[in-house]
Amino acid sequence: MSNSLTVALIQTSLVWENPTENRRLLNDKINAVTTSVDLIVLPEMFTSGFTMNAVEVGETMSGETIKWLKEISREKQTAIVGSLVISENNNYYNRLVCIEPSSHITLYDKRHTFTLAGEHKVYTAGTEKVTFNYKGWKICPLVCYDLRFPVWARNIEDYDLLLYVANWPKVRVNAWDALLKARAIENMSYCVGVNRVGLDGNNYEYSGHSAAYDVLGHRIDSIPENKEATEIVVLEKDHIKKFREKLNFLNDRDEFNLVV
Image (tube, rainbow, N blue to C red; front, side, top):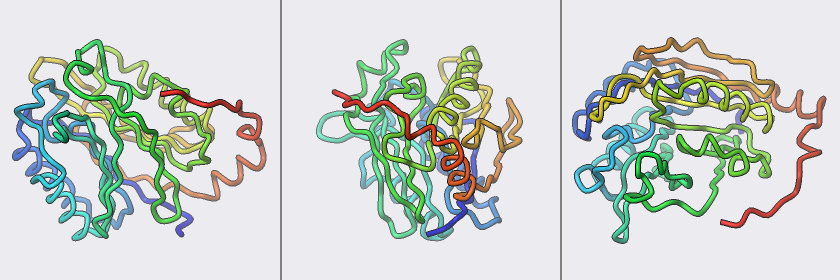
C-alpha cells in the first residue's frame, strides 16, 4: 500500500483512425517520462480518435495495442490506462483498459454512449460500474460522456480516485471544466481527467483542459490548454483522510440502488 500515487497525464493530439501511428507517437511520449510514476493516463480512443468507424479500427483483447500496453507497462513498471475500440462477441465497445506491470487488466465499457454523435448505434454500452485496487488506491475509471451523469459516478464505494479519459470538444469544454471540479467536490475524491488536443477527421477541435483536482475541488496541475503536454501529479492518501474525517460529507450521502 502506498500513501502517495504518482500519475502522468498525457494530453496529446491523435492521428485519425491510425492505430499503428498512434502507438508510435504515444510510445515516444511515454518513453519521454523519465520520472518514476505509478500510473500513466491516455485519452479516450487513443488509437484512433473518437470515430464511429469501428470496423476499420477495432481490435481484440489479444490484438496489437493490448500487447503493446502490456510490454510498456512491464518495461516501465507502471500501470497504463486509456480507452480504445474493442471487437468482442460480434459487438464493438468503447473500452477503457488499465494494464498493470503484472499484465493484470481491468476493463470498463463506457456506460453512457454519446447519442449526439450516434455512438449508441455503433458501440454497445457497458452495464457495470467498475472500481479496482492498485497499490492500495481504490480507483473508479470512467469515459468522457459519463462525466455528465453524477449518479453513475457517485462515491458509494469509498474510492480514492475518480478517473476520466476523454475526447471532449472545445465547443463544450466549459462543461468539462465545471463537471470535473464538481465530481471531485461531491465525491470527496481526487478527480483526474485527460482529454486530447487538435483536430479530428470530422474537423472537430479539441483544446485539452486535462486536469487534476483534490477532494476540495482545488486544481493541482498546471497543464496548458491547446497544447500537447505531459504532466506529473502526486496524489496523497493523507489529504483524503484529513478532509473526509474533518468534514464527514460522505457520511450523509443518500442510499440508493441503481437499476441499469
